[in-house]
Length: 217
Length: 217
DNA sequence: CCTAAAATAGCCCGAACGGGCTATTTTTTT
DNA sequence: AAAAAAATAGCCCGTTCGGGCTATTTTAGG
Image 1 (cartoon, rainbow over the protein chains, first blue to last red):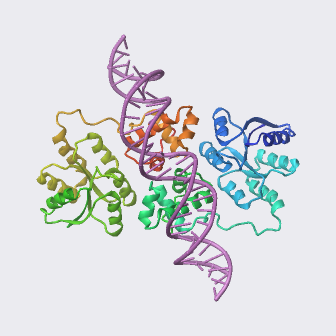
Image 2 (cartoon, chains in turn blue, purple, green, yellow):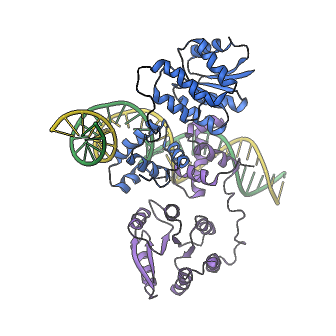
């Protein structure tokens, strides 16, 4: 008996996913959400064993939603869904603490296999399974492991992030570093994009949680 | 030999303060700053033993500047200056970790007495001294201790603060709580004022640092 | 019951933010 | 020396913030 919440902005997609899930007798879809906010609202009322979360959604994307759900319910199990086999997205999902990553147009059988293994909680191997499935779509690519996976931010970007976390405005940062406010904004845009975050408060959270101890660069 | 940095937006005030300090041979004013940012910039170059910080300044007020200085240099000694004998301000200063609070139009002798005692580091009694001086101006007032001094925020305000710290926009918060965005903004304004902070990033910091463990309200 | 505090909501307005662009210079790497 | 990455800077434009107001309704406390 495993309960699912399906989060996707497309109603057709939600139906298609529910159909696949219905092929496994022990899987129950107890809710569908058309967006991140809806998902959060749903979870306030009722918990699901496994949350299937589309990445590409307007308003609040799957990364952000996952971040918030994990923030409120760290123990929740989230599988992220995407049409793409983007390695960056995949690692981003893992970084956010998602339990898995599924490419949408895989065979239903593969989905069920995967979800059964997640549900049964054989879970230290989750990542291996995800990798295996992902590999089906990336064979012929680079060795996939893009290094430290934390050093996405450049030195300057980390510096600016620290100022943001200290509550500086863009203008303040520009003054402190003797550069133009436009440059600060550019860095900010890049940082937001790289970290899949949406505003400077979330950046501040990120900075405090990752607490780059005295950036030993 | 004690070095001082005087922070005040008024040049006349800085001069007056420096004049008082010059009456004590072991006191040296090594710098003046006309604003919070200037003070921070100065401290990047040179440290002062004691920082005299005016509270009422445009741009970045004394509370905010103190918060940042304490953030970067927790060991620094800061005395906050004000024309008022506002009890709230006084406690706010202590809360931010300032070592003292001086009312501007006190007798120079009292200033020197006070600063000598701070400088000599007899310092657990700092607060007592500050209180004594403050008392000269509050005699005839209420028993001055305004309770827990932490419960400034109402239940609702704490709730909203939490959302802010989670990176929600005002609109998001309004939706999550089913109230108007205007109301959220009103709460936000009140919170900012009560905590003497300037923007939501600083609120996020505050929230995370004070980590209301599961608000047991 | 009555009153003070809190929560709700609106308006105006300037400042700050964030996204989407292009483009040049500097630094690093190959 | 050439190529790639990073840092700099600008522009436009719509959204979000934050401050200053007033005002009504709800909730608590005396």
